[in-house]
Amino acid sequence: MQIATDIKFIIVSLARYLHTQNQVMAAIKIILDTRTIKKDGTYPIKIQLFHRSTTYIGLDIAVKKEQWNGEEVIDHPKSKRYNLIIKNRMIQAGNMLLEVSATGSLNRFNMKELKAMVDGNTTEIKPEKKDASLITEHFERYIATLLNPRTAAIYRETLDKVNLYDPKNMLKNISYTWLVDFDTFLSGTCGVNTRAIHLRNIRAVYNDAMRRKLVDRNLYPFWDFRIKKAKTIKRHLTIEQMKTLRDYPVQPHHEKYRQLFMLTFYLIGINMVDLLRLKTISDGRVEYIRAKTGRFYSIEVLPEARAIFEQYGGKEFLLDVLDRYKNYKDFTARMNENLKEIGALEWVKNKAKDPKRVKKNVKHITPLFPDLIIYTARKSWATIASKLDIPKDTIAMALGHGTNTVTDDYIDFDMAKVDRANRDILKAMKS
Image 1 (cartoon, rainbow, N blue to C red):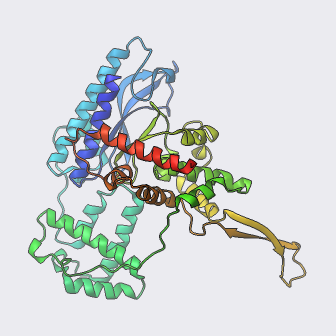
Image 2 (cartoon, rainbow, N blue to C red; image 1 turned 120 degrees about the vertical axis):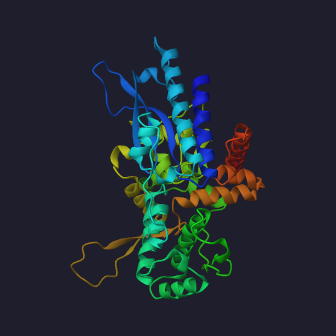
Image 3 (cartoon, rainbow, N blue to C red; image 1 turned 180 degrees about the horizontal axis):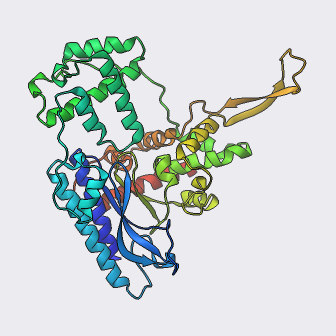
């Protein structure tokens, strides 16, 4: 298992370093590519490279499914040799990504260029230079660094608003007065919180331009400009409400949605896309790189979570959802709709005056929690943890908000604290 431990350290260290450098995640992972089977019944082992999209690098190694434990080759005549090749290639790939990251140019490479470097086909690629004096150019540069397609789409919406408001489009023109006028311009079509999103996007892009020495720090317009935000409903449940939801006698078609909601809670508010793509439980844990942030997570699978995995086991993934849904977003939307419908059901007399109506009674639902959505699980875990006096730094670590450095030698200790916190919360759910 030492080879697997070394590879895991490479992956974690790379993720931590890139996070601290504010660079788009370039994640590497070693996988058994089950999409293609060879004539002898083996599957190729590949390096999975993620950088705004996903690609694969072959290692000229192929084994059967039972000879791959998710981390290394086992029970194979060439296990030792294969594992050394895998380790060396992962070290080379990790070092190449860290070297490019150290120059601050990782965000400028596209997938084809980065794959060529990681695969050793080239040692020097000069990214295309663009004029960053325009807001549009720097927005495009910044959007290219974003991992989540939805986040990138929101930034592009902001850019469309900026282009509509300011055709001159010069980055240096953004000032306090520019921001005030832009906010007024948006008020005609956008609410307070929507305007806040656009203004925060501009601030993020401006901060990035400032770090790149494209604008003068002394002219920073956000010192005096305050981004307004309207209060929203706090979407979290108390521990008693979580118990009520867990034990409520739901309608049969709501059962799976309720169970998967509880599973996200048991796994510390894991995102739906990451949950549905989990493939293995290794040493009692699920480990993954979060699609939204590129951050590495390792979560202990407690009995409550394991029972749900066993109940809804899939063919390729731990859960069966993607056996039937091609797009996780479709399932997420359906799940959110059904979560809001969990509650008391009664049939009431149909008061419609139309004599052609066949139904005499109509279904009426009184929702337990009308604003319940998948994200509520994550907020609820954090809130309950706080109520149980779990330290803030542990909660931050659990949610992925903690510090993240290559030289952090305390990852095992940190994860032990997170594991203990999750056990305390689930223990409180039983009392």
